[in-house]
View 1 (cartoon, rainbow, N blue to C red):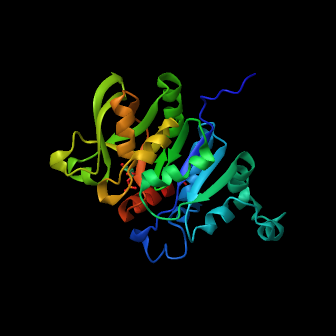
View 2: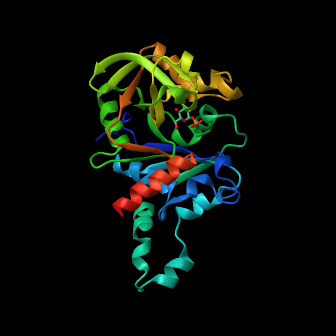
Length: 277
Ligand code: G1P
């Protein structure tokens, strides 16, 4: 059978940020490695990608992030120490992840924004549609994961998709905000989107959360995208170019999402997962 070039096979994880809000914890440990209970944030993201049928993980790292590569690799010393002991089961989950996927890495040399981080991933993705997970947005579902829901929607619309949720309007300056026309229950074709607007300028209270499916033309658009909000290259600005051609769907996902980039969200996620433990 010929390969399906339109299937989502790769997931990009921008993971180069400094995590300043979590200093000093993030001085020597990547923020993506901070654990909610016993599992690092990034592993939750990788497991979500696996649940969406994705087996190739492309991670954009930066200086001081080597722990990420070590985490998704075998630790022979550890394996040797606990093999055959009552503690061996603690390794089951991560062994399972390592067996199921391949990981590739590239480094973002300068921090020039999320759009720039995604552009750095082009070398790992190539010319095919792909998913993006921002690991500090931690999602949980009883049924299909957020990314699985989005992959299903992609199969229908075949264009870029962003996950959105309603937020209190006063928080609009923390998110990309979208507006558009309803296509079907939960799916909106985006007509406008703005990165972190003041509440008075926000086109709605629908905020993008850290789950995207992007068509590969986004890379050429990102090449041309000028620095926007905060002097950084914003994925929201590049997506607006696609949206103007009618090519971006906002999806009101089913499930819970925690902003683990903030202390409050991190504590909330920890309590939530502890209750489910
Ligand atoms: C990024 C995006 C923003 C999006 C958010 C979701 O912002 O630029 O549009 O709403 O992720 O978490 P950041 O949180 O990296 O500042």
